[in-house]
Amino acid sequence: MPLHKRLFDLSLTLVASLLLSLPFLVVALLVKVTSPGPAFYWSDRVGRNNRLFAMPKFRSMRTDTPVVATHLLSDPDAYLTPIGSILRRTSLDELPQLWSIIKGDMSLVGPRPALFNQSDLIEARTALGISTLTPGLTGWAQVNGRDDLPIVEKVEFDRQYLECQSLFFDMRIIWLTLLNVLRSDGVAH
Image 1 (cartoon, one colour):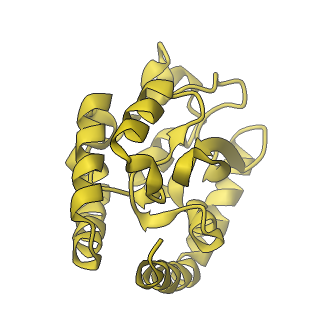
Image 2 (image 1 turned 30 degrees about the vertical axis):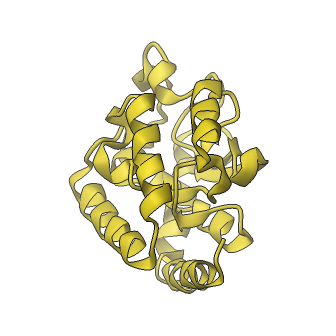
Image 3 (image 1 turned 60 degrees about the vertical axis):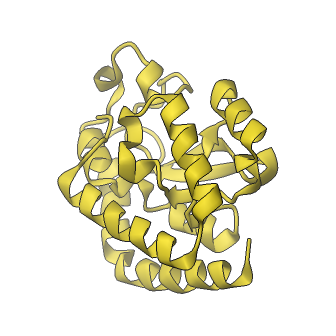
């Protein structure tokens, strides 16, 4: 990852971590109080150059949920915790990923990290060189449909990001992400 992108990531992430520390604690407490199990869920994800890493999220689903992409569950709502749909709709479940950005496993902007078992997505990204990018908290595919996109379209948006990445493009994607989060666009509940 270029040094300017890493410095941009660290600067924004540290400021966001400070500003969001109280909501972070409140959400962690609410997850613990409303459902049995840990506040965090550590998801095995595919990072840069297809290296696996553990990505934290606030747990929005029961502990007995199968480890597959949400769209592959026959009835995802049946697995949600009492506050799971709120966490997902507001993207608050993603807050712990700030740790992955600080650690260097993720960037603010890049292709969303695939689950370790999403071989079709991993293979398509690898074939186009997208796997050389550091995965992001948000990305071009997220602001263009997020969970509503089929894999072929996600990969196409990821390819466009690979070819057009710049600090200005990253700032545009962050702005569009904030707008989408406020509108809850494209979120699988």
